[in-house]
Length: 174
Image (cartoon, rainbow, N blue to C red; front, side, top):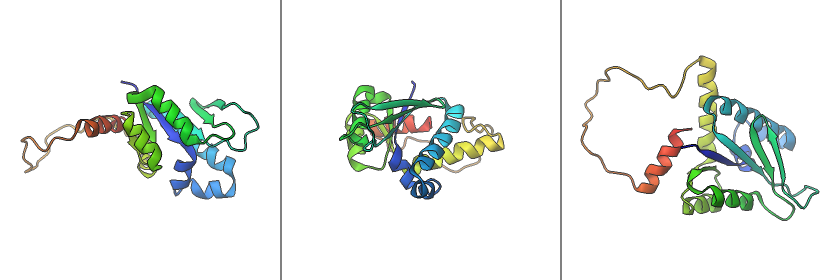
């Protein structure tokens, strides 16, 4: 099952310790740095990625769409927020979507559409881990093999709800 990652662009940039200083200096520089990180991530994981930015200063009445290094970039039209655009995409994608945002309204709507959600700081950790493992030549998808000594019981544990299991399954693919 392919996962379509939908990212609230400015939310992710401003929640990130690495990207927020760039954003404060120059808005375009923060966006470009995020797109560079996502392009490197896409080379490793091959997920479809869409980043949505607020385009309140855009001159057009239409949404601006662009493709940058395999990442689909969408700017909202004048009078429309990025949150609204994300909600439209999630309504279309439904269970195939994974939304990256710390905005409660967006997260709540995505959950109501049965889309998985990840907070912006948690996704930044995944981005950093993927880039680190690529530098070290480690494939994070490889399972550790061999005997693992433990005293942990193997019986059934408390089962997660269907919604939580679906969310966990999608986030494991990150």
